[in-house]
Amino acid sequence: MISEISASVTAIKTSLDLLRVLGDAKSESEIQAATHGLHRQLTDLQIENLRLAQLLSSQYEEITSLKRELSKADKEKREFERYTEYKTGAGHFIYAVRDSLDNDGTGEPYACPHCYHKGAISFLQALYTDKNDIFHKAKCPSCSNVFRMEKNEDRVTPQTMSDIGKLMGGGSFS
Ligand SMILES: [Zn+2]
Image (cartoon, rainbow, N blue to C red):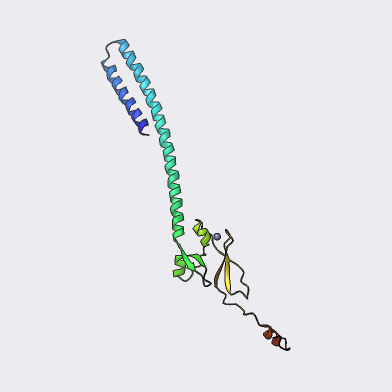
């Protein structure tokens, strides 16, 4: 860039010198030589200007693309910073949106800790909870890891064989 600019400046200086020569020219041959030189300098100048314009345009494109990347990286960073470590009722560490913890759950999804540490936010998807399950479970759709979440409040304690026997009205199995 600097070399292109200085080449342009040199061509302008030489052109101005030639114009001075042209003004002071006494003979026809002097005028012709200066005119010819001036013509050549102007052509050089046009070429240098064209190079500068191309350079500026490619640098402008580069800056635009860098700005885009920067804004994307900024956005991702902000998204990651929204999350904090969270220990589920079952003792598993996962990631949760900070605000959702402060406000007692705003419906924000949890994020997989494995994927989070690999630089991706992957929302955990709830799995079906059976009536006998002690904890609710959630699965990461990206890495397939399963996490135990909160206690299943609707859990039905499995009946003992003796309870089943009583229900059937018969004798005890135990
Ligand atoms: Zn994952």
